[in-house]
Length: 196
Image (cartoon, rainbow, N blue to C red; front, side):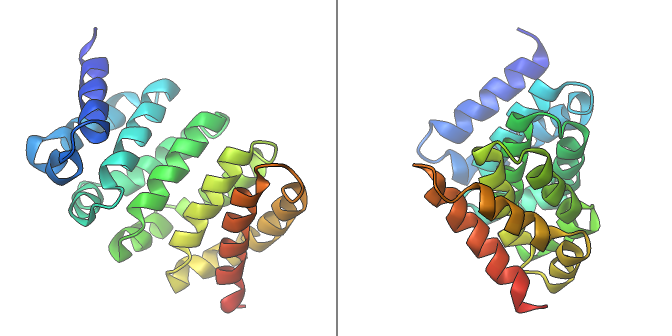
C-alpha cells in the first residue's frame, strides 16, 4: 500500500470509527496528513481527491475545532479547487460539496469559500449533475450554508444560483426519496431569496 493510501485509510479510520476521533483528529495530525495528500495528489487523481474530501467532511462534522484547523491550513480553497478540477465526477462533486457544507458551518470558512470561487463551483455542480439526486442535494446543502454570508449570497445570485435551484426543484419533486433533495433545494432557495 502506498503512503497516500495509508494516510487516507488511517484518516478515514480515525474519522469514522473511534468514538473520540472527531475530537482528536487535529491533535494526532490526521487533518494535516489528509490535507497534504489532497494538495499533492488531489489535482491529478480524482479518487484520492474524493476520499480526501470524504475524510475532511467527516473530520469537521460537528467539530468546530477541526473546521477552524482545516480552514486555517487552506483546506477550504483546496476542496473548492478539487471539486472544480474533478467536477465531471458525481462522486467527487457529492463528497466535495458535503465537505464544503460541513466546513462552512464556520463564518471564516464561509468567507474563504466565497473568495476561493466556491459559490460558483457549487452552482456548477448543481448544473453539471442535474440527474444525480445525491450530488444535487449536497450542492444545495453546501449552497445553503455558504450563502449565510451576504457576499456569497450575492455571488450565488450573480452566477445564476437561484435559477439553478429552481430548475432542480422541477426535476426533484415526485420521486420516492426526493423529499431530502427538495428540502435542501427549498432551504437554499429561501435563503437566496431573502437578499433579492
